[in-house]
Amino acid sequence: MQFDQEIFSLIQKEFDRQQHGLELIASENFTSEQVMRAMGNVMTNKYAEGYPGKRYYGGCEVVDQSEDLAIQRAKKIFNVEFANVQPHSGAQANAAVMLAVLKPGDKILGLDLSMGGHLTHGSPVNFSGKLYQPFFYGVKKEDGLVDYDHMEEVALRERPKLIICGASAYSRDWDYARVRAIADQVNALVLCDMAHPAGLIAKGLLRSPFEHCHFVTSTTHKTLRGPRGGIILMKQDFENPFGLLNPKGEVRMMSDLINLAVFPGTQGGPLEHVIAAKAVAFFEILQDDFMVYAKQIIANAKAMEKAFTSRDYDIVSGGTDNHLLLIDLRNKGISGKKAENTLVKADITINKNMVPYDDKSPFITSGIRVGVSALTTRGLKEQHMEQIVDWIDTVIRDTDNQSNILSVKNDINQFMKGFPLYPGWKI
Ligand SMILES: *Cc1c(COP(=O)(O)O)cnc(C)c1O
Image (cartoon, rainbow, N blue to C red):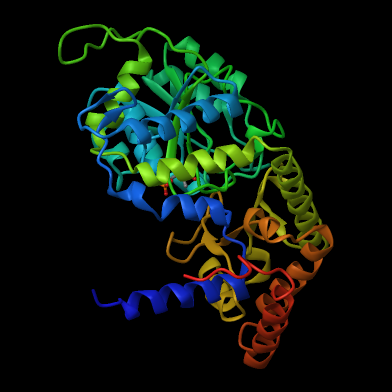
């Protein structure tokens, strides 16, 4: 067989890019080498529709054990009764929960996308906004914090079947007890989508959603630092309160409905190689090292908050409790798009982001989102955050100064040599 020079040279280029630059995209991270090894191997060859012990294909004895390990470890990390590790992504995990508990046209209530929510929480361009009837709550204009009174007002008016909390661009912790109290008034179920802060929740550094939320979904590749994928968790299994029937007419336990909604509801065969890699990531999260990592994330985010604040950057919601910051650039006279496009020239990768009550479109935006989980994996500490913010500020203050940008880029490339990524790794 001929070697695919084209693709492997692109993989090498991507490796170089990741090594040399400052990765500040809040949803990204660097997995360990053993997580990557678990992902790229013979497990990709196996079809395993169904669940461990109940498959539609023969030869699943081994992948059954590996999927079981992933499930057991996920349950142990979060101290929960139920885990489904098959969703191919965070979006798939949310799709499955919604398929399990909603009928087309049912009302859902989530955080507005333009205020930090996610596409899968009811956006009109997403299945969640097309199949279901979406309503939104926001954050308060004065302090940028989630407006639980607004959530309650819309919930009482619309009586949604499902209330979704969790966000993609929100730097503060959540009041899950309040969300549940609101949901209980209208008999809604609660889904917490902890895709971003899951790694911090895993180590008890943020409030736990599990006592209050019927379902918790997450990606596995953000702060959990695993392979690209999703999971669905429940603290406790319970009987489906809507009396929804499965196709055979039996009332099911929620765990059965969730499993059926993943497969065959929204997916075919699970990615057993990715599930093996999820198991490896969960193994790592259970070690003490991960606590050191999670605490360092918070220390770095706080150091970054301080450095931005001292340079008069306007941080949405006044600061951070987690791994990310949302920065409103309007007082700096530059759009999110311009900032993103200029920073990338200096090998600083961030993303433009809408800020609450933004007057610019999602393609331009007034803000940027920065996260420290990836750089914390590289080994950067609090003192480096000051330097990074200085580089960002230098570029943003003078976006037309090419020699300035080039000199920042050179400094960054030199600096990152001190934090090798996958030393000795060969593709
Ligand atoms: C990232 C994210 C997702 C989607 O994850 P994918 O794996 O990209 O599908 C879902 N919800 C939230 C809140 C997210 O931040």
